Length: 321
Ligand SMILES: NC(=O)C1=CN([C@@H]2O[C@H](COP(=O)(O)OP(=O)(O)OC[C@H]3O[C@@H](n4cnc5c(N)ncnc54)[C@H](OP(=O)(O)O)[C@@H]3O)[C@@H](O)[C@H]2O)C=CC1
Ligand SMILES: O=C(CO)COP(=O)(O)O
Image (cartoon, rainbow, N blue to C red; front, top):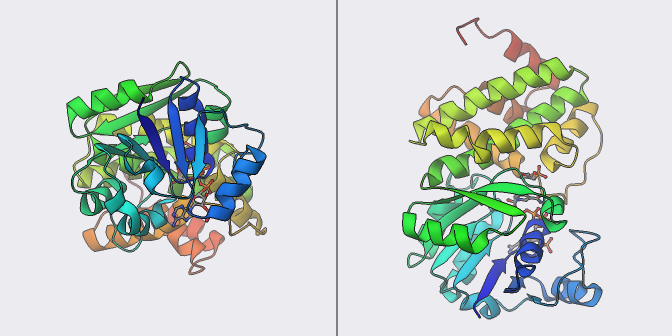
């Protein structure tokens, strides 16, 4: 039986490993540090996904060769380390398809995961798995629906079959650009929504922010040739709603902490921060109007206070919706 390889032993990689193993398949999860791999093996649990025991058919390894010959590899590292990881290890991965689960835009290059996979692993077919799904929900077997995007329709259909489970329902598209941008941009909006709630601006303001944030996401994605339907689907609108309204979201919680001027653990993965900076820079260079994203980038870099950012957003010229 073929092994499903998972590169990145965080909450999401572990949750995917658990749910896929429940269908009887062999899964190998690669951690980049042996000490962490050993800790997971000892406890039969990953501290990044507490309370979830690993089934017997999930192996934890720190040897990239243990996932090297997998037919299929899920890439579950944070976005900002994806390029470095594939530059180092991509040559050892011979998978026919690699499915990026990370959400964001690479700050150094302005690229999404598909372009990074294509550059580092040209023989593989890149795909994207994204949508509204907290790792803890997936691992607990709660119903979850995601978008599987692959430009090759045949490979996309095969991946959809391979990665769907009784609780994880995948919808298919060939629009990888729309899928990866939806997942990247919703995290920026979640930080903004968190700031709105943290500063006490209210639920009405959050609804306005989500709606105008969605308009902004669509504008940016359109400039890259994405299909509007993709943005309106699970990978865009669906994930935007989840992440902007749940305290389970790290991006939202980071925004709340910013709004309340409270400490936030820098070790926590907050993909929207680097993505806000990356997208703001691209938007400026390409003349794409992205006021919420620009404000988030300014606030997290300390170049603007939250009250200044809100004032600027509210004093923009009145226009048609
Ligand atoms: N958690 C969730 O609910 C969801 C997450 N995602 C996405 O999945 C991606 C991963 O998130 P998540 O699993 O939550 O993150 P976590 O913070 O839980 O884990 C990230 C993992 O990546 C590891 N890592 C760090 N640097 C490297 C590297 N250079 N090479 C290999 N591994 C590395 C970390 O190891 P260490 O700490 O030991 O350095 C850690 O185990 C993100 O893009 C996120 O947006 C998508 C949907 C849901
Ligand atoms: O992407 C996610 C849900 O779909 C997880 O969101 P956070 O990274 O904000 O926790």
